[in-house]
Length: 432
Image (cartoon, rainbow, N blue to C red; front, side, top):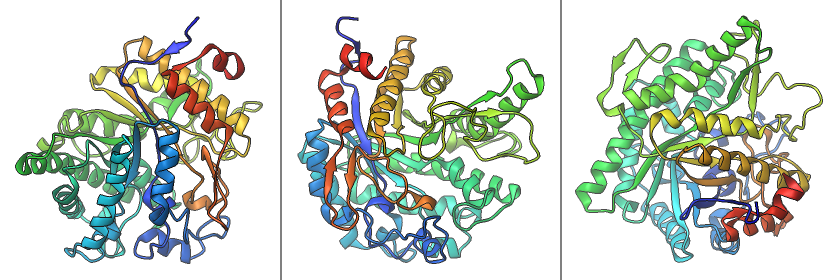
């Protein structure tokens, strides 16, 4: 224990943001429309967000000061392709400058191609319910790779596809606010097919153009589902059922290429098989399961009394991250924790959260899970979708009136961990 818990050489240490949540000034996607309809719970609109579109150099200086060696961000589809088939080269050049700014600081860019937002024209054609949506997305992906692929070592195709499908078409929380299991499954299937097409297109385009071979992955939010009562057969079965619906069927589709129920009827999709070079895992909490009236309740419900929770109301449950990582060992792929973080105004709680979840990552590594990196969500406070500006995930506090950035104590802690490539005894004693 003298040297603490040491992470593997070359471990990726990062933070993440997404374009719409931090850039500001975008009026051309479905989320901007959703905000205008008063759908954000605190009544806010993304507006200028963190003004990262103009301040990315300042933000990447902060990232470099934290010793990050990877930074996960997204490219806003509606900026690149404001009208179907029309590529805005000014915006392409903007994202080239963003990526170059990271590379100048010695930070590897990990680029997400779809992070929740759709161009308005795409939604007007039915969004992810459109049977042509996978090929429409593939066309966008090809253009991004053609113009920027010489600079990008890591791609995330689609962020949290099952969140997109369920929140948009089952729970009615994201645009277009539908509540239909049938539509949810259509969207989930199309998102899986879109991922597969994007994976193949990225590799083929890079090879054709002589670009360096990138590493490509979907990013899957993987809640840990547990029976509320482990001795109850009904609760055990409910946990298994929800885990298969939300996690298993999508992961198996990407691994085997087979769309099993409820995504399909067992048909094999060649371009989907083994369409990952690593597995991107977003983890926040667990869900305790018992049969309920709803077909599928919202994730992260059933929080036991008396446990530690975030400002979101989610249980803080680091053991779930270890169990999720262990569950992925069977796929034989490297894993990167592409998001893990907590919404809290109590920065001491954030420090505890980081240390305890990194300890869970280390436990998984010690049990031979090939975890290559950990990316904290988020570098800075931002526009947190339907909850607007209420939730504070950032290592960096943002004053949304002055746009001033202030590093929290958790940022200093994270820098110490990165510099040591380890959880030191002092971290474990104070926060473990």
